[in-house]
Amino acid sequence: MPKIIFLPHEEICPDGAVVEAENGQSILDAALDSGIEIEHACEKSCACTTCHVIVREGYDSMEEPDELEDDYLDKAWGLEPESRLSCQARVSGKDLVVELPKYTINIVSENH
Image 1 (spheres, rainbow, N blue to C red):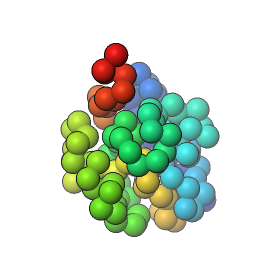
Image 2: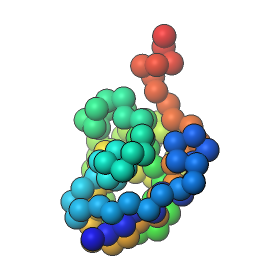
Image 3: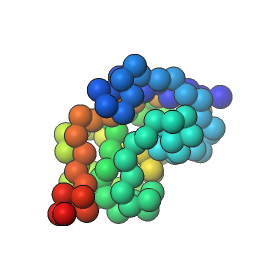
Image 4: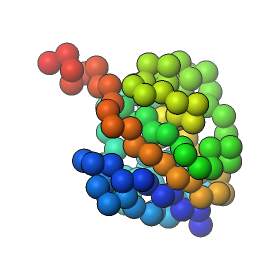
């Protein structure tokens, strides 16, 4: 079973974590199943950037992002070539190393 190694994040995962994931499972679902509360304002519908992650290792083992995901990634804070929306990026048999960005852009909460 593939593992996802989450690098330490000051607020969400201070000590980092290693979680097991099923093939085909999204990075977001694997994180949530393990108590890592990655924000997901659009409820996993690929309609925001709050679940943005950076896949530091294993990026090439996943399917390429589709056009809709790419469009949203263009709006993400701290975009990098290995950026993905964790609700769309699915584990594909290899271990991943994932970094949670320091900031997210949540238009819903920022407009209140």
